[in-house]
Image (tube, rainbow, N blue to C red; front, side):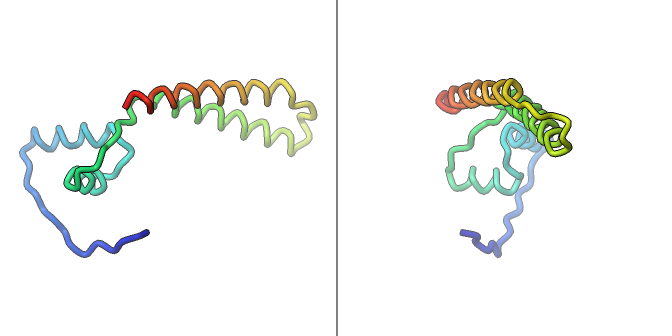
Length: 105
């Protein structure tokens, strides 16, 4: 549900407090507004620093899959068995690691 927000809240911070806030926000996938809103409302905020490496791995697999799809569509590749098996195994490993990270929280 998309709520319209009509009210703005302003707060003044010291340079140290702003640096601390920015560091905390950078560990999440939230915007500054979302982060502050969630903090103010007592929401549980998860750090994504533990999954950054997994995100890089997923991006690489996505690129490989995109290249493979491109080559198949061009007719350059006709046999996919080993390529798809490798991609499936890589994805299974990443999902397993991601679940471990999420269970730690």
